[in-house]
Length: 307
Image (cartoon, rainbow, N blue to C red; front, side, top):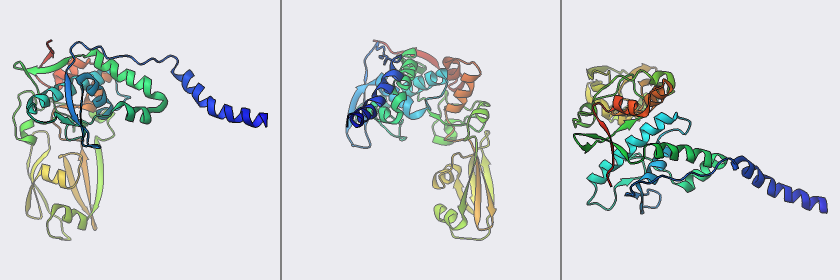
């Protein structure tokens, strides 16, 4: 009986001691606040609005928007871009009930409770990495003409970023197309293919079924992304096809294969602003976060929030 009790106690306490030993060299670091600004975040899961320190929000955005195994300089670049994006939304929405939502509608934000469950034993190590990235860039944002920039970003380029005017119909001088040759070496999303049944393809595009498929590319951007095309005589914007077919990019090629269509895309995301995997490639090549930011957001200035 004693042996059974001892065995049960060991089963209970061994995991506790493993966690203790694993984390003995890790202590949670704190955020080094200089200015405490608050952001109002609408949580999709509860539909409630949470008011939290901006820098705490940025840590949660890093967790939601960039893989934890990314290089520190890429994480720091993302921290500045996300802070700039958040500050811009705070300007836009100052007369509304909330500044941002916690989803891809703005920036994905993950709170500590979620991260503790998701990361388990790695929580302290991982959260310290993100807090270090935020502490290293505390209060920094990008400005252009003394105004906060709308620092858009996306996953993976097709070798180039895109002009904001081509995708979102607004012209920002700091969101111009630049080369991004690093993505193809570091991102598994650089080149992907999906297959759809021809019936589903036509249904999603809301055009009549036809066993024949004629694709006419009418206009491409200078970065090879499709702006206008015709499918069996029906005209679409590239962004419409991208949205309706849930494609990864507007740089795509559609081919008929029997009763299915094969769609190959290059890149992942809208293409405007900083490529996250491009940032990773630059960091691996030795670029610093401010060099990454100045490459993707041309002629911007790294600025500090004032007291």
